[in-house]
Length: 398
Ligand SMILES: Nc1ncnc2c1ncn2[C@@H]1O[C@H](COP(=O)(O)OP(=O)(O)OP(=O)(O)O)[C@@H](O)[C@H]1O
Ligand SMILES: [Mg+2]
Image (cartoon, rainbow, N blue to C red; front, side):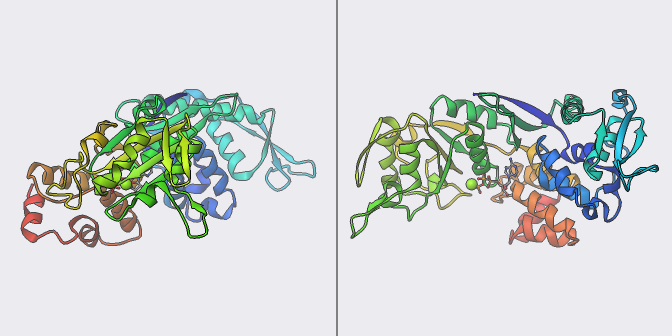
């Protein structure tokens, strides 16, 4: 496995970086029928679709943004002759008009994307390398404190695969997982554990088998069962064990500790006894558990959690999976709101309050605000959620 992290500080700015000028006005590209192309281009380079989409709908480049600050203007390429198509060029004719486009290469890229025109003298590869060079410069600027975007170098000369924005622990978790060490991700609600596992599977080219476990999870849910007609009913665990893949046992600390001991031998040994017989473990079987506690039982916040068997816990490397605030900011796309949520969270933590203010408050809140809801109402819905007036006033007093 070979992969590297890329860094994009502000995905909105990245979107802006490639967005056509036409898209900045009302109506914009939505009517040009090429929005999807642009989104695909941005997404292929690690910018989230929702960011690009959002920008195309409403974005107006802000002159102070890093992408438009002008200090990357050194990358102007020579004037190019562009085949503007019969309706585009001033001298458009049957064989397609031509126009000289001078200036910033982004202008040319924009034209290619938004107008669907074919540039003369520039092939697709050149355009692609120009875009890549641009993005690389963009990333260079924001290498520190940035959102991680992971790019995987594929075997057999397949094109690199961009995984998109990731939690800052994703690379480490993927590396450990690749070495065959089972991991338990322990962290507060909404930190991105489940999503991170999905991305790890994508990075490692493993099929993803998520399984939510809880107090009702039984031995049959894990190992499968044989029905009255004698047919075996499989489970994600069995499929991952036998065929290879990444098994995610989600919310594992909510499961019954006794039932979970079933997985002890399965994780440690090369064989497991299923209702229809003994099966050999596939070399590509990997397992990650995600939970909110360290398996030592319920705490003041996560009251429905169980104590896990020491022998089960012993089989996992434990990863402290805290919030990644840069990721939170990038997903939500409303910096002022996210700052407010993060400040409330910090204050609640300092005061040791039993309040969960997770990145979901940032993400969902940003969505509601974008839809035009009043901030006061949004706070009520996604932050306070029934928190007593006394606790709330202590948190907001800061
Ligand atoms: N890398 C990411 N890219 C885009 N969205 C993300 C990413 N990571 C997390 N999210 C979003 O953040 C929210 C919380 O993520 P997730 O459900 O993975 O957290 P969790 O730690 O598993 O939470 P819980 O402990 O409550 O199960 C979700 O809405 C998810 O879509
Ligand atoms: Mg989860």
